Image (cartoon, rainbow, N blue to C red; front, side, top):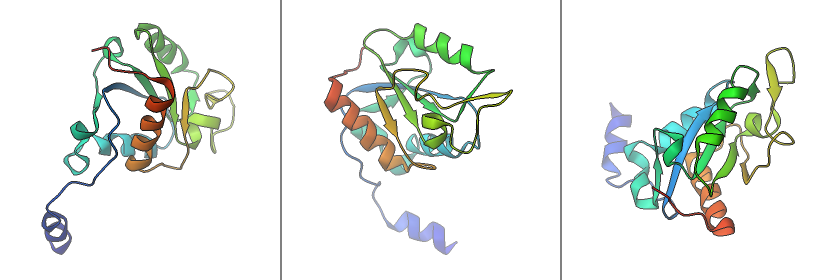
Amino acid sequence: MALLRAILARGSAIRLPAVGPMAVFHVDTGGCEGCAMEVSALDGAAYALSATGLRFVTTPRLADVLLVTGPLTRAMAPVLEATWHAMPDPRALVAVGACAIDGGPFGENYAVLGGLEGRAPLDASIPGCPPSPASIVAGLAALLEASGLSSSA
């Protein structure tokens, strides 16, 4: 109970940098789900995501950014490709976490292809195992600055 009172006593949301208008579609391709949980945490009240200009969308047709967590499994490779082709231009591909970048502890085998690095042209990589929600937003803000992406929806 003391922890809950301490959280509620803070009174304000955790402050994240402004990103600008950016629609993000998240795909988890496998792994331990650590990075996926951090991405999901961004959508909670503690981070006041709407104030950053970042929003998650439920269809790739509305997305500017494809955010990938987890190592690329053979079963998810065609799903990820179909998701990418469903997105309008301009679009960006972002790997979140060590597994999505280079496979992390998941080596290439009968079920896992590894990370996206070297398999697809990444617009940004957000390292960590898992990266914090603040690191994810900072990485997306850097992507927006570098590429000039803006929300198409």
